[in-house]
Length: 264
Image (cartoon, rainbow, N blue to C red; front, side, top):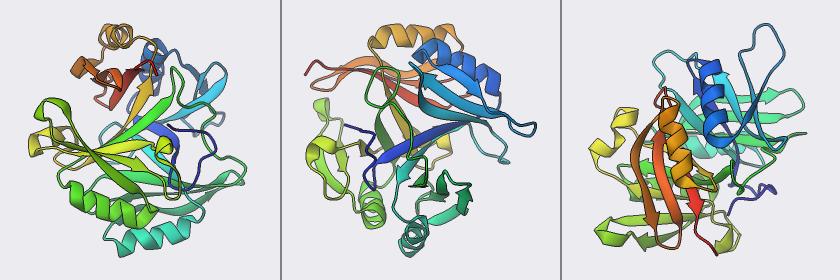
């Protein structure tokens, strides 16, 4: 489960780079019940998503040349500069160098050795999102990669993550569960899965992370996805012990998952 104590190595923030901020705000408002709060400032096009008054994600205008619309997941770290050094030692690439965001904290963005993009946040006054693991908020993070062993070596070296493998039902391969360093397995926050090249077509063959959002009714959420210009890549399907889920694309083809968790 994801919590808001944001232990080092756990997901703490996410934001969406979208070509049309207004359209993205309307879409996620319909699908997840989010309210959009624009940021003040003439040069800013973006803002925050809230659920029940609590911040759940950020939204900004996609400006990077050649970049695809996508969610960026941030992991909490005690020292972003030290993380940058660890990324470089492990063969990763610095996409956005460590920078201060006033008194709120420090951030940096990276690519893993195979091209999967992720980010880190060193908290200042702001530690991260205000709601997780509840309907309409982040409940899991997931990496699709062409080389699970290489991903485990890289992310294990950078964050100290522990991995435990489970077999997917129906011969679907191996899924590696991710737990932050020093925490018990009930604090696992994500997973990674090796997929064939065609499974990475969305990111041009590179690995990619995506968020899983909890919902109360997966089928109802999927109906809102398709009614508001999005599409469904997989599902809705039932996963034993996990819940009912669907892999979705928003109208700009940014990927995410909706999951109605199984009753505990």
